[in-house]
Length: 101
Image (cartoon, rainbow, N blue to C red; front, side, top):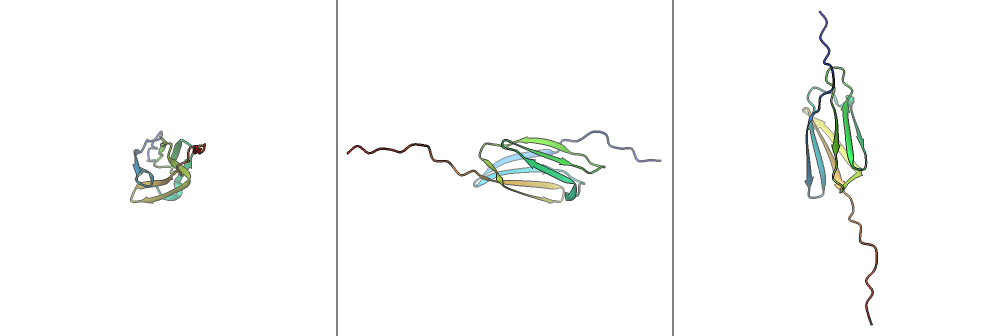
């Protein structure tokens, strides 16, 4: 007998937390090898999917505005995918205070 194929994609459990120096996204994606995980970071969202034929996951996560996608790093261990962003440099307000002499 052939194994039944798992139809459709699953949404992994996701936790987005703001930490002191950045933003941390944690996803539970058990049973997938890290070579099959694809992550795309956009300005205000993160798309994660697995291309594993047995376990398909797909999730789009909204990112807080302070997440700097240029600094993203990810690790995958024991079925847990952790993606960390540094906070964007706080831009100083435009303009200059003029002292009255």
